Amino acid sequence: MNGLGGLNKSPNGVVLGLVQLQLPTVVTRADLAAQTQRIVALVGKARRNLATMDLVVFPEYALHGLSMETNPDILCRMDGPEVAAFAQACRDNRIWGCFSLMEFNPHGSPFNTGIIIDDTGAVKLYYRKMHPWVPVEPWEPGDIGIPVIEGPRGAKIALIICHDGMFPEMARECAYKGAEIMIRTAGYTAPIRESWRFTNQSNAFCNLMVTANVCMCGSDGSFDSMGEGMIVNFDGQIIAHGTTGRVDEIITAEVRPDLVREARLHWGVENNIYQLGHRGYTAVKGGAGDCPYTYMQDLAAGRYRLPWEDGVKVVDGTSCGFAAPTRSYGAGQTPDAREAAE
Image 1 (cartoon, helix red, strand yellow):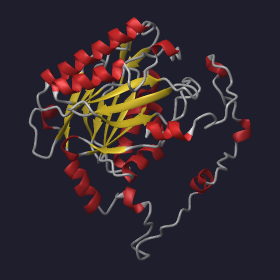
Image 2 (cartoon, rainbow, N blue to C red):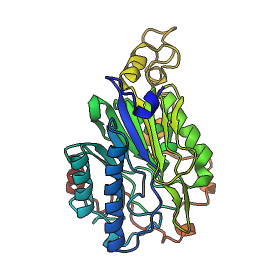
Image 3 (cartoon, rainbow, N blue to C red):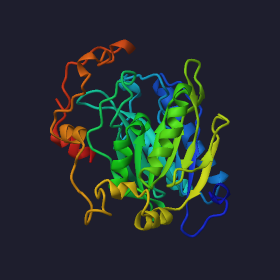
Image 4 (tube, helix red, strand yellow):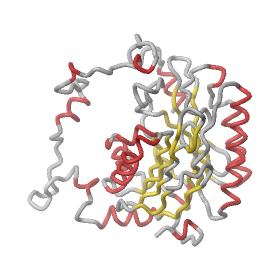
């Protein structure tokens, strides 16, 4: 049930809109300014399209396209005109918005950044993509974790970006920190279609969490993005799905965070987010709360290593035309810079 796409809004409902945005080509500052205004116009369309909408979500690369361009002239800053324009659009239309930008990083490669702005124009969530889609993407790996905020109507919301969603640990972290709705923005192209669909569903079901997922759409003359806006309920059922590939279509549904909370408290069978830390509670009082997973232990200790690691062939971006990096993770990133981002 999705309230007829949000037309019939319940007292506890949150109405989401996912914009299958036409894939742009952005090369110059003028291109960037024009694309900023296009997104602003679509915020207005979202509000006119559905008066009940609480949050409109734009896909990854909505502002910059898929060129992977690291030219500082078209990179964004949080105090720049693009973020200011998005904030004004949310304020003017009294709607929350989720936006994507490639952000200048004075200490290394650009960050692939996602933000959520509330209906007063305040930035409420700031996230740096944790898992760039290597070897294709040149972005700095995110270094500030996954924030969870209180969004419209009190819903707990997290944001991850594209390839992040292929790691079950990312969705689990969102849920573990309290997220009831996880947004996943992407620029994926058609070869990822099936993986996109089943990970969006598994991320929801395995964590009793709504997932709201959207890609860029259409062609820029080189790349073809697939749209595929998907809103998945906490039981893994798809409640809205943009299957037509129509550019600029806004996929909408009402979701119920209150039912997420109810399921997390009352489900026994398949309450997996709880049972992970309480193994076998039918046999053992309170369940086993240990960490029996070798990969978790090794990752936390800084010794994560695959049995076949020495044979892995693609370990940098040279196959995609990027120079092999020489700087280690965290080098040059000052504590003050991280604190400022937080």
